[in-house]
Image 1 (tube, helix red, strand yellow):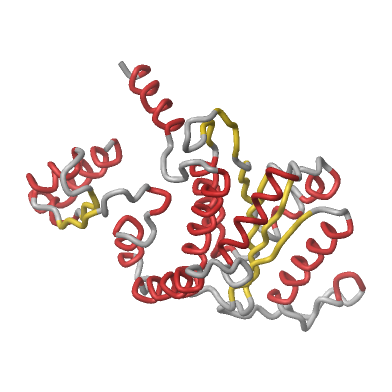
Image 2 (image 1 turned 180 degrees about the vertical axis):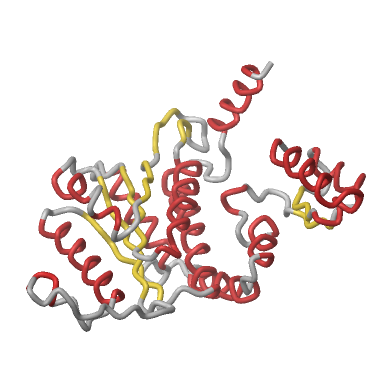
Length: 290
């Protein structure tokens, strides 16, 4: 709402009386201030389905409206999500990738003490997938009571990294620090563009060998080098491969992580869809602001 106040003031200054035509509201059907404002000002409005929390909302108007405004093919995203949904309907763990992922992470955290989950995409276009995953995993699984109300303290701590940048800033910790991390790398099979590395610096053999190769090959070589370094150090990692980055594969990936999170909540016997710890901080913030 603070952003609403800032943006509407700027719109009124720029476009005057037509400011309301420049707003699309994504809101609950009945609850909250935004629906009241939408009705009062005639905003174009899309509705959030009941029971969908923010971190699970990518495939409803919360995620689809801004994606469409950015020119992303949201129908392809939904087809990708539907394809992953179909794969995740079986109770055969070896054929259900999200259930297998949840089981592996459950074993890591509950039986092996692997309490940190590093999300490390090897593509700049996937950088913010790691940000979203951190919220999804932390807010859904970090709980202090089971569904039956028994006291627990569960949940891996998710953290984000970006290959190849962060293999130079964080890999030292991952290979030689505590044995408490599992690293998930996201590989892209075919990048959308190819960057050739020119020949040059022939007098330096450790530079000249790059000439004629591609930046694409270099990024993949660094990812494979990271995989090997982790393996050699006895550290746990896995690699998820997207054939390419497009709306369909992103739809698959988002739904895969959402389902894996839901399954992990069931294995931990916690409610993966609430966030009471967050609500406490909001109430305290209201008190600070008077």
